[in-house]
Image (cartoon, rainbow, N blue to C red; front, side, top):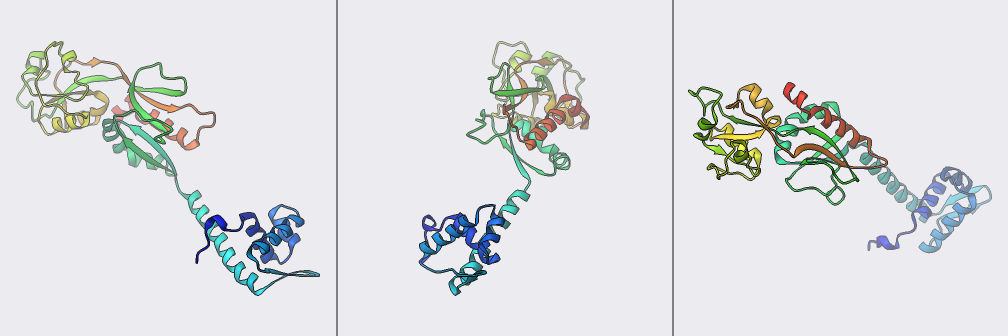
Length: 296
C-alpha cells in the first residue's frame, strides 16, 4: 500500500541519508550539505528509527549500506533526480506575462503584432485576456492592462498614456463606391450607421435623437460589419490605421472628434517589479503608441 505523503520521512532526513549513502561517510555528506557531521548522523538515525530498519553499518573507517539501505538509496536517489529534472524544466520555461485588454485592443493591436513580440522578447510567453471588465491585478493574476480610463488613477497603480481616443468615421470602399468623398454630415446620415457599446454617433453628428442602425456590444464586431460593407462605423483611429493604409477601409468624412477617456497602459506599482513585466511594458509603450501604429 502506498504510504501517505503526510507520513513520509522529513526531506532533510532523506537528503542526509542520500548524501551519506553516496559518500559512505557522514563527514563528507555533511560537507556536501553544509551542515555538521553530528546533524547528518542524527538525521540518519532518526530516519532509521522512523522506518524501523537499519540502513547503515557503522564501521571504524566509514559506513556500509545494509541490504535495506542499498535498495532504499536507489529509490531515494531516483526521486531526487526526478525532482531536480522537474525543477530544471520549470526554470527553463519562458516566463509568463499576462496582459488584460479590451477585445478590440487585443484583436486590432496585440494579435497582429504577436510575431514581432516573440521576435523581440523570445524568452517571454504573453498571455492575453480579452475582456471589457476591469481586471483585479491580484485576483485575476494580471501583470499589465490596457484600458480606456481617465486620470487620476489610484496611488497603487502606475499608468502611461498610449493614445488619445480620436474618432473617425470609416467604411468599406465598396459601400461608398460612386459617392464623392469626403461626405457631408447630411450625406453621412443617409448611410447605415453601425453602433458599438460606446455609441458616440449622437455626439459626433451633434444629434439629440437616437440614430438608427445595427448595434454591437463590442467595437471589434462593429468593425467587422464595416469591413463587410454593412455600414459606417465610428471608431478610434488607432484601431483602423492599418486598414486605412491598405485600403480595406476609407475615411468617409474629414470630421474627427477627440473624446475622453483615453487608452492607458496600467499596472500595479511594485518595489521589485519582474524584469519580464518591465520588458513587456516597455514593448507595449513603444509598439502600441500612435506614431508606430501609423508606421506598422
